[in-house]
Structures are given as C-alpha cells and as structure tokens.
Length: 222
Image (cartoon, rainbow, N blue to C red; front, side):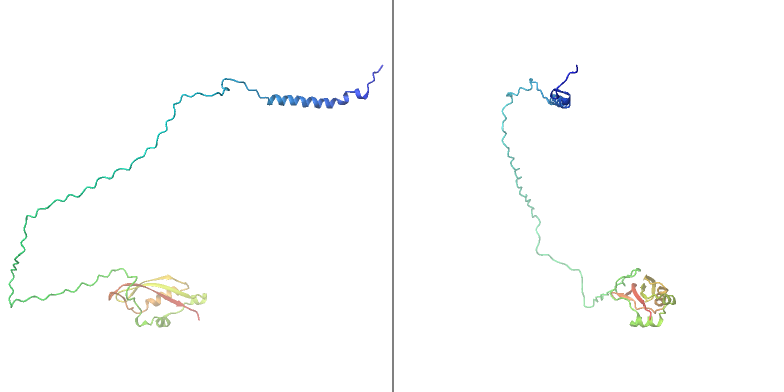
C-alpha cells in the first residue's frame, strides 16, 4: 500500500530554504570565529601606579654673562728731549764772490725743445683731420670716376666705403675696402682714390702726422 503525504508535510519543497539557512548559519559562525578577539591578562596588563625613585628636578636659574671690561686707557708717555744745543740767532753769511764793474754775466741761452717724436702708427683721431686739396673731392670724382660696365648690366648701385692712410707728406697708402657692392665698383673706387693728388696731411699740435681716414664713393645709375 503506497503511503500518502499531505502537501503541507512534504519537506522536499523547502529543501532549498533549509540549505540557504544552513549556509548562512555556517558563514556567520566562521566569520564570528575569525573576528573573535581574546585577551589574556598578564603581568604587563597591570597598569598600576609606578613608583619612581627619581630625584626631584632642581630648576637651574639662568646665568647672566657680564660683558668684558674695557681695557684701561693708557696715556702716551711723553719723553722730554733735552735742548742742549743753543742756536745762535746771529749767523754771518760770507759770500766769497767778488763782483766788479767789468765782470760780464753770460747771457742765458734757451735751447730749442726737440721735435715731438711721431709714432709710426697712424693716428685715428687728430686735431686737424687730413683733407683733399682745394676741397674739390666731389669735382674730382665726377671727372675721373667711370661706372663699371658689369655693374651697369647688373643694375648695381650703392656706396663703397674706403679706408686709407694719409702720410705726413700727404701721400696715400693702405687703401682698403671696408664695405663694397661688387660688380667692379670696389676696384674702380680704389683706382680713383689712388690717382688723386697728395692730400693735406692731418696735424696734431701743429705737427703733420700720419693719420687714418675713411671716405665713401657713391655709384648711381642715371
């Protein structure tokens, strides 16, 4: 005969609930076991009053250091110098020179001062600068300067700066181009300057000296 159970008494339907309750209980017990803290009371745990045998601390008063005393001022010792030597106020001056009426006194001759030694190095700045004779430098350029054909074909124009030395006799030397424009203009400017007559030399304290000069030659296309 097959046994019959009522649906309310069937425990298989609640097996999942019982399993969840069991897992939750076991996890709770495991977690409580890990988090459980137990302290053993030992000798160190007795935190009673500690009796110390330290001596009472003595408060040391602050010491004041007095400033050092200034050294005594020593007065200078005055040593008297005995004045044993008597100076005779009456001094006889004897001039052993006989001046007669016929004695001739030689005239004083002032020798000429030697000329100032002029250095071989040219002066950069002088009191009276050197200049072209007659102040006709522009006229001299217009009559002697030739525009290079190469510069005309290339359309080159501008200014050529020259540096040169004027000797004490007015001759020119050490002609250099300090700023050129090319196209044959630099060489033409040097040629014209070399062909110029002697210049009036510069003077320093009235003496003709060697000096360095600078000049500009302009090239303009018409």
